[in-house]
Length: 250
Image (cartoon, rainbow, N blue to C red; front, side, top):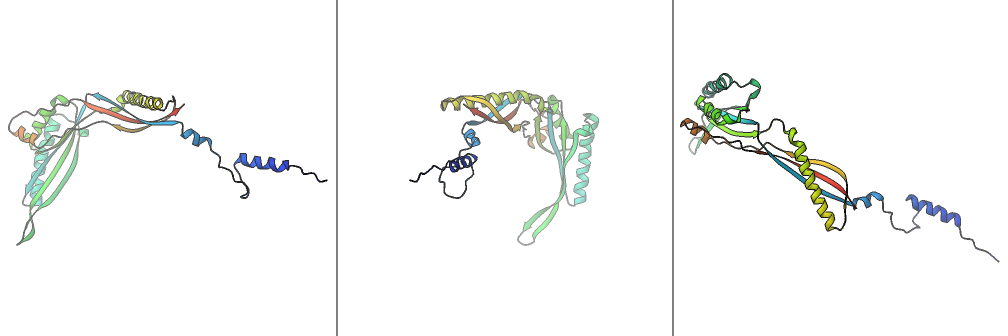
């Protein structure tokens, strides 16, 4: 009488291979294992937290310019240089600005064109354009400075931008606000899912924004030429940041 024995060794080997996630041949038809990292991904909350504080600016960045037109490029450039020299002298001698707080922003000399059906396109004089970028810290006198600059010969005021020279000093406050905002959002999501918020797994500062600007149009120069004082109010500026935060969800 024959006796049949269960192949124990084969069962043990197959079990070991299944545990290791390795398969030999195609004879075993079983579901793929679920790994721990996939499970962890289903137990996290990802939110974006925003923080903002309002501060008083401590510096103004001013862009002024001189634009001249003449029949030739040389004449346009010569007239432009003469007017810009007066502006530079005013800033250095009267307003005592350091050289490091003044730099050329743009300089160009280019032809102006006219067009007619009879003659086609023709050069009709030249324009010279020279801008100066100024860093100025006495914000109460910005309007007065603009008036004096236009009287000296500047006929373009492109913009005035109020900012802070050391935005890092406000980062701790704004980051704390952004983190509190992220905590609030994560708690609301966990509550809705009938779960709880666990530890913070990662934090990334997604954005950091400050130094908005205020445009000052060419009308400022016109007002100054009519002996009216220009009033510029710096007000407050915002310092913002955004955090991307990942929480464990229990």
